Length: 126
Image (tube, rainbow, N blue to C red; front, side, top):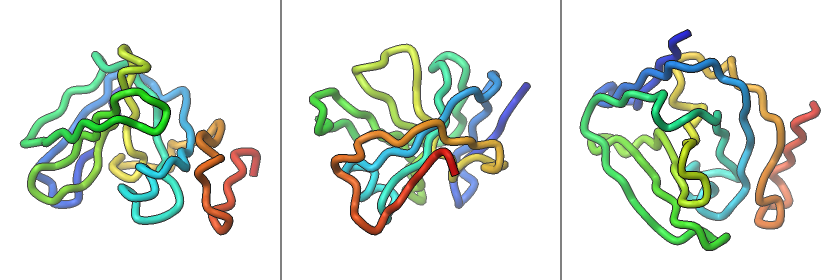
């Protein structure tokens, strides 16, 4: 099964050679800033199962949990695509909004709720 996605300007594309089995919403302050709202949505995949084409850039920073978080985004339009963290070396987190078909996303949980904003109400059970 191949799943595709990319940025809004179309200069960066990716293909995932894996069935999507898990996903989550993240309310950390980094995700709030990147998404421009209260959270980001991610699908979880193995790092070696994604092929990215195009000119991407990476921003590495220390996350609030102490891990190094790498934000991978289109070098042209800035659209966020993928996150990687030193805490989980074999997996990565693909931004659901960058999928060609984001309807495949089913959140299993919400992480970093302690950073969540009172108006950003998320319940993966609903």
